[in-house]
Length: 484
Image (tube, rainbow, N blue to C red; front, side, top):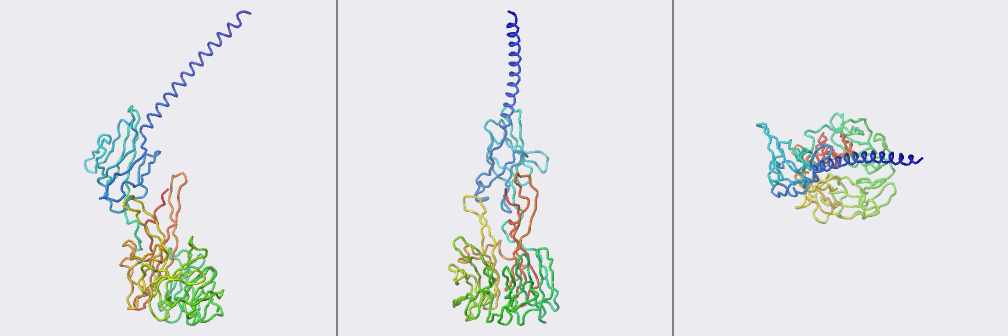
């Protein structure tokens, strides 16, 4: 009986010893893992940037570089401007202070020998990124761990902010014979309509859901008598055109119905679900019948298309057009705005060349921030081009407004039309999206995005001859995959 407790004590001591042994093994394993983690972490790059060099690029030191720790990649997702010289760049590397070695390796294209720079000793040495293949190698403090990154300084191969046009045009979607001498294109619903007419009075309406593919369904249309081709406009519910002095409507572009309203001399365009036009010296909305007197200085015909837009400063939608001819025959280069109840001149700090048939449309422009940071900002703007002036010549410049028509300035070279696109007036404009796709391994990948394309359709020479062509353009940067 007296031995029983002793046996339990001995058994307990043995168990305790085993537990101690197990804990010792566990502690050793955990310690080794901690040491391994510490060693590996001493090879991780926390930041990477280029050093200041205003002679090379304003804001070079603010260019953002992404660090992909999983795949060992360092790169600038937003490429530097085309032509940037990256042969002699100095870098800032956020490497652990405990790292025993930080080396930059540049490959040679000639003798096969790599150039190795000891960054810890020579942090101001220049790196040649133009040949690609630059590597960054970091060793841990104990020399047992090594991490290698590929480093790329990306440079655009094309001018990112240029309005790029196709190198050749395509013919208008028309099979008329003789060839069409008048044209107007509009968007109606989710489709695009191109109306053409020839000298024999024959007319066709071409319809496409995807005009960038140049796939059109073309049919003959019986237009109203004395139809004014340039007056073709569309609301969400119908197409409209002036015939004689009457307003006609259609839901398919093929069959037209008299709206039983007369005195129409011009259609500015759609405002909400109504058509806004001119009846002599008065403006009028159809079908509501709301009307008012047109200001004397405001054009009554040959204006650009009317565009509606929303603004945080206004309750009701606003609308804008540019250029045209006034009631006394004067040519105007002003932009005018409509708010549902009346008109007002918008241009007050610089206007467009006074002209008829100006092409106006909303688009985008890109600007660098300032002299300190390399930041490219996307701005909404209005673009105006073409137009025939009172002296019979056609404007050759492109203009932009960043403040809804108040101020107009000649656009940068990047937005000017190429020499292949001849000067013209009365050109129709179509805006449509093109979808791009790309694979991605990001957590929330961007695999699809839209780029807004411009289609310039038709237009006339200074002598009034119709250009039988369409041109497609887009700002290059808008086709790039969005940063994420």
